[in-house]
Image (cartoon, rainbow, N blue to C red; front, side):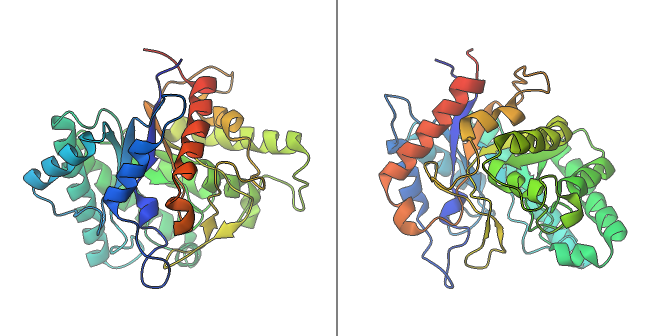
Length: 341
């Protein structure tokens, strides 16, 4: 059995799309318990990726607070991987004060990550960001918007370098400069920092092929018949060949070819359950487009991979079978595209 990449679950789906205008937040401790309880033929999750946002985690935690959090996670035989910086109070396409807030959150997330590494609790992972701005804002001045996003991300990379961290931009259609595969590549090329990369989520990137929020960057033909798998395969190859060289963080996910939003979260690629019969991806197979190079060789770039399933109903997330099904899918990915050390 392969033991790499390590298999992680995300904690932020307990927060994203939840709240007063949606369903209640799912408590952090409960998510940890369900993650730790998942078991498929004796195989369990290895860790969690953390969203550094309240009420789960306080970004202003002291080092002692971070150690207590690490101890709690370790008590479930889990480690920590990538961290999501809570940058949404500071849209990059906002004011100077907004961008200063954005960079302050990146700095705090990098410190958080450094402490966890020093505690021996974080063997792999990146700091994940987005532009915290909308495609509509970007559309008002595409050239200037990308330049401003890239400038801000360069500053974030400089901060991260002081902490030995990498910054990964989330490829999601609701974020300015990240809302299509071509705009994402343009942003990354303009940032031009060795510690800047791309965070690929299989659900969100499927929407890239469909041209949501930027029709001119569509790869799949309009009116595509989902029964013709060869066309989708070609589209995924085009997409991943372009973005794989930038990819430093990877989320396993399923999508039914539609967008969805809940709570305060804008519409983006719908995360479906691992066993959803309407899912358009062959998850275990299609993960290989990201985890193998254009010649089919393992890249071994991702030391861990993470399941992301945001905006699931709480009834789904509170069902232990959901997490067993997710873990089973993750195991299939590792068996097809993993390795042993």
